[in-house]
Each structure stands twice: as C-alpha cells, then as structure tokens.
View 1 (cartoon, rainbow, N blue to C red):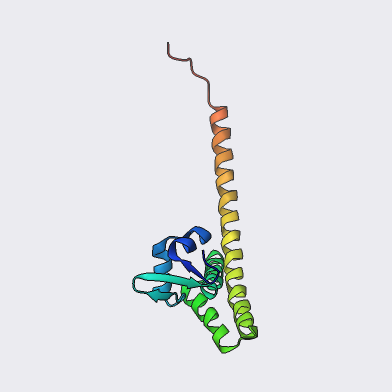
View 2: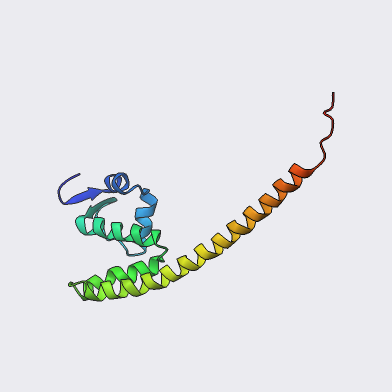
Amino acid sequence: MTAMTFTIGEMCAEFGVTPRTLRFYEYKELLAPIREGQKRLFTQRDCARLKLILRGKRFGFTLDEIKDLLDLYEVDPTMLTQIAATMEVARRHHAEMISRRDELNAAIADLEGYMAEGKRILAARPKTEAAA
C-alpha cells in the first residue's frame, strides 16, 4: 500500500470485502476511487467511507440511508448535521432491533418449552425390550 492510495486488492484485504463489493459500492456512488484506465485507486477518504458503510450495514442501515448520511459530510464539514441525522436513523434501527430481539426471545422460549415437553413424553414412555 502506498501512503495516499490503495489498490482494489489492498482494500479487499484490509476490509475483508470482495472486489465485486467495492465495484458495487462505487456503482451506488458510495465510493469514488480514482480511475486510471481499468485500475481503481482508493484514497483515505474512500477508506473512511468504507469503514462507515460496513458499520452501517452491520447496524442494519440500508445503502440508501448510508449514502444519504455520507453525503451530509459534503454539506456540513463540522459533521454536526451528519451526526444528528445518523442519530435519528440509529434510533429507528435500534427500536427495530429491540423488537426483533424480543420476538426471537419469545420464539426461543416457546421452542424450549416444546423441547422440554417432548423430552418429558419420551422419558415417560414404556421401555420395550430391545430386539435381538
């Protein structure tokens, strides 16, 4: 890696993504590598944006939400607008995640009850002689 730019291979190795992923993010205008013919060179800005993209995806943000949040940096370099908007999206996704967790916990409890009942029924069945 050079000090200022990174190849697609270096970005893939650093962030654990595929070249296809990076090209897709470029297509979606989330990243804007320097183009030299077929070669793509990613800048420190692209690295920072990719970190935020991957974090946003982990939190369940859509790519459109992530793009909107990243684009706010261009509007307000102090990042205050971006932070406020990110907090709003984060609050919404947090509530959705809590709801999904609660539904999953209820499903787990139901399944554990079903499994316990099945175990009880199997333990209470009469023992039969083993076939010779």
